[in-house]
Every structure is written in C-alpha cells, then in structure tokens.
Image: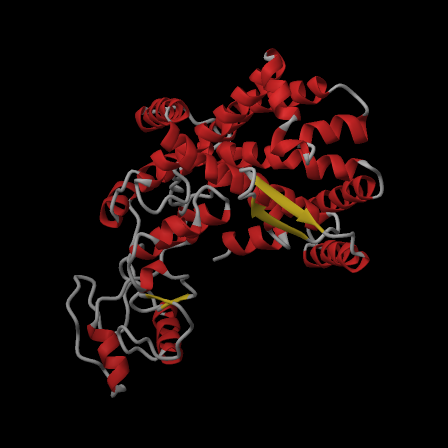
Amino acid sequence: MPGAQRKTINARQAVKDIRSGMADPELMEKYELSAGKLQVLFTKLVDTGLLDRSEVQSRGGGIERRQIAWKCPACGAPQTRVYDECPACGVIVAKFGSRHADVQDRTDPHPGESHFPGQHGDGRVLPPAQPMSLAAGAAARAPIHEPEPLENMAEESDDDGPLEPRTLDKPEWTMLLVGSGVALVCLLFFWPRWILGTFRTLVHEIGHAIFGWAFGYPSLPAFDFLWGGGVTLHIGRSVALCVLVYVGFAALLYMFRKNTSTVVCLVLLAILHALLSYTRFHNVVILFMGHGTELVIGGLFIYRSLSGRAIIHPAERPLYAITGFFLVFSDIAMGFSLLTDADARADYLDAKGGDFDMDFVRIARDYLHVKMTSVVFFFFLCSLLAPVLSFLAFRYEEYIHSTIAFLWRREPQSATASVQAV
C-alpha cells in the first residue's frame, strides 16, 4: 500500500530463532509474515550465507519448503511453477486479470479498501451480474487476498547494519569443555588413544595423497601393517595430470568469469600453484601436509562443534569436538616432545626401523637445508594456532560465510537483483 511503513527483520535474530528450533507458525507470528513470505525469508538467508540450505530443508514440509516461483493473484497460494489455472482456487489467471483491471477502473466508494467482482465491501459475496465460468465463480466465492508488496520484507544484508561477531553461549562452552576434557582423557589411555590414533593416521596419509595428486603425482594412501602408522606411495610425476590441474583452473575461470573477485582469487591460486609446482617447494608442501591436514581437519571439527553448522544429529557436535581436540592435542604433544626431549627425537629419527625417513627429517635435510628442530618449531606454532583459528572462524562466521556466498555466485550483481525483485 502506498505510504505504508516498511517492515524490516533482523537477520541475525531470525537465524538465531530458526536454529533454536522455533516452528514456522511461531516465526510467522513473531515477524508478522505470511507462509509465502516466510519462505522468501528462508531463501534470502540461504543466499546471503547466513543459513545452510540443509538447515532449511531439514525443517520438513511440502510446497512451502521448496522454491516459490509463482503466487496466484487471486488467493495468493505459493506454487513451484507458473500456472494458467490456479490448482488451489481454480481461478483462470488471464480472466481474473482482465476482470480485476475492469474493477480497478471503476470509482471505488471506499478508498483504501480492495474490492473484487462479486464481493461487497462488508465481505458479503454478491451474485454475479453476468454468466461466468465455473472456475471464475469458484474464484469469486473464495476469499481473495492481494499479494503484499515485497518491499515489506527485510533485505538483510543492507537494512540490518553491519554483521556482528558471534559469542560463546552455553552450548558452545559445553562443546569446548567436553571436547577438550574428553580428548585429554583419550590421550592418557591406550584404547581410546589407539582408536582415535587410527583415524589420525588415515587423515595424515590422505593429506599426503591429496597434495600429491594436486601436484601431479598419482598417490595411494595405506596403513603400514609392518611398522605401524601409515605410508603413502607416490608414483612418478604425470605430465597429463599436471595439465589436467590447469584445465580445472581454466574451467573454473570460465564458470565464474562474470564474478571479478572470484576470478582474481582463482588467478592468484593458479599462480601460487605454478610457483610451487615448478620448484622444490611443492615437495615440502606434500610432506608437510600430512600433519598439516591433521590440523586442518582438527580445526574444522572444532569449528563445526562450536557453530553447530550442518549438524544433522545432536550427537555429532560432541563427537566433532572430541575428535578435533584429539587431533590438535596430539600434534601439540608431538611437537613439544620433539623440541624438548632428546629421546623423542631419537625415536623419531629411527622410526620404521630406520628404513624410511620421517616427514620433518626429509623437509629439513633434503629441501630446506635447516635443522629438523626448526621445522618442528614451525609445526608446533601451527598446532597452537589451529584451535585459535577455529574460534575466530566461529566468532566471525557471518563475515566468512557472506564472503564465500559472494565468491560462489557466478553473477553476483544479477543474483542480488533477482533476490530483490522476487
């Protein structure tokens, strides 16, 4: 309605209410939204990266959980595609539009009120003045609601002000205390340490393999049943695989060619890959990212336990916390012992019966030509930083996901315009 005051919704509060388990009727009552506008709100929160699509889909439901492509101009029922005849009220859209236009041309005795053919100002249905089709009669008898203008919906990214950092509430503190406490207990006892240590070995070798493939070396991670732990077998470098990596970069550049920011990031990443790939430093990355992947996965698990993002079952959060802290604490303990204990360094040098050199030994001796303790000290610092970075990722989650959502769009400007014009 012209001159109506625009209604805004605080996106951060809406996300908090949705994640707290508030049902759709409660959200509609609190924010004074129709069912259709509630789905528009869900769509906008997903598009801006404040909600995961899985969080909306997990709420269940039918038509109102799917993308709304069209609303009946007579009854306002949301549909997933455009219809010539509304399946909800049976109105023929073309005839309804022409009849509605005729009524609007007449003088309205009650300004500010909407009247349709066959409906009196007090809500009583009048008999039609001329024959009409069965569908049109059904439309006249049905309660008719004009769709409200979209401008009453909030545009979260602009109207709600700057994004705000998250704070640790009771569930987050619980995850921190439970996860870190149980992880320390697991480090002290053999069987839990062995079970989680097996997962740590798997992550370690997969890290070697992933970065081996990324730099053109076909790689196969495996457990070492002779000496324990694991081993990753690297085959000779493949030119075809190296070319395929850059074909992948080219395909991504083409896909995101209209998003300048994403193109810049991809170009910088391709240049960095090339600089590493054609120097000895790519071997350093492959060797380091065994333990480095442990820190990445550990930090990611800690973040997911704190944020609750993409969690399907509540039991996942403490499991993520325990496993993440175990990976990080194991690496911190390993780095500290190698820096302070000569016996631990001797055991590390003689690992696997002395037949194989360990990762830090090869990095220091073969590629960087420094003392092993220098490499270990850098790794120890990375281990200490992992939980700190996890907390920062949780605290500034809205900023990070907003940036990722922006970079993920192929046409960010047109995408934004389409959201505002829904």
